[in-house]
Length: 282
Image 1 (cartoon, rainbow, N blue to C red):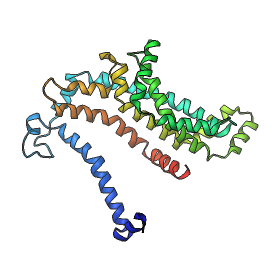
Image 2 (image 1 turned 30 degrees about the vertical axis):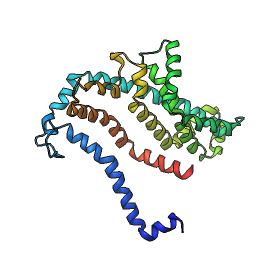
Image 3 (image 1 turned 135 degrees about the vertical axis):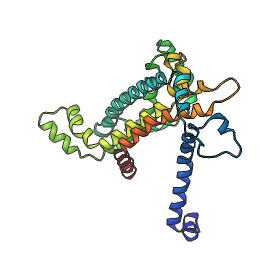
Image 4 (image 1 turned 180 degrees about the horizontal axis):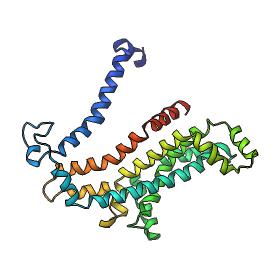
């Protein structure tokens, strides 16, 4: 008997789902709650043995230090500019590329899709030196485009595949009817396809935003100037020469998580429906 046949006999499906839910809860939610709790503790309390999960006295002192010890607002602003810029550029290019691959008679469509999938599997570290040389040759280091352009390229494969899944389910007759009424192909795409594929567009946009918001290696390598550091790089500056001020670092991490959490909460229904629909239609 195969493992797929043995597991339902040993463990009922409901129990399996419960175990999976507990694993995801512990693996995903518990670290976030620990960071949140640590952000309200003092360094002395954090070193106590035995360590407690909840702080003895809640204090916002660590959050004040997070904003005063380093220019946290500047880091947040830089991250917002880079993430929003790269997400907008990614969606623009991905929408055009996905629409062309789905609707137009593109030669070598299968080869192009294979290339897109292959590019998405490249380790980021292998692209670091070529990208650095290109950006240095274009004199773009220590600038917003130094991160916006690479982040857009790195997010394109996933966003193109997500949008292709949705564009492929929209009947071509709707666009043809719009073009008969006088719309251009781009006009039909903007007025018909994109509104109908809104869950996919939101899903692709949030994936691109989160990838840009969390990225560390390229931000550290391409924007070394203190005034151009993004949040992931800026948080590393909180460490001292011999110690790590974990309460202040945790407070900065919580501040960095809040924008992404708000984004997910606001567009939760669209993102979930987009991921579910993409999984079912793909």
